[in-house]
Length: 204
Image (cartoon, one colour):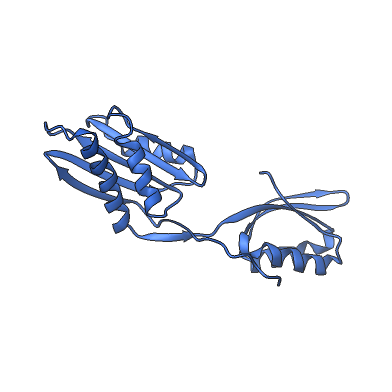
């Protein structure tokens, strides 16, 4: 096995979390959960937001993608502080929403930033966290005879097979493999196939 480059752990939530606080007579309900796509984040937001509340302000981050929404609060006072709280906890693949029921006392922009950002930060601090294993999508081409050995190798390296296609000159297999194991796969497959098999990163 060749040397593996060090990877940064990707931390996310192990499950849903919530925190209910009252700030100057307004109720703030912070909720957060793991999400792996924008559609998943938006579906969860639609499910947990309260249409009868004064505001449902939210943010999500998935890798380099992120979005946030102030939902009628002054610009920059809600959605962005929620996103900053997610990032401040070093979390990824997370969506959070703060539902506010207005209690009659205005907080001002600074107060809103502290209320929205602080409630989410506290919610995330109390939540159970887990580590995501980053995976890459790889495309492998090899002879038919290698398929049993290749399947065994992928299983040993904690990979998942997405698709297998059988052509006239061999098989094409698309797999998901943890990033730290890619070099090991390349090395062992090269030995198994005497350098004939190919491994490429897939755009899928």
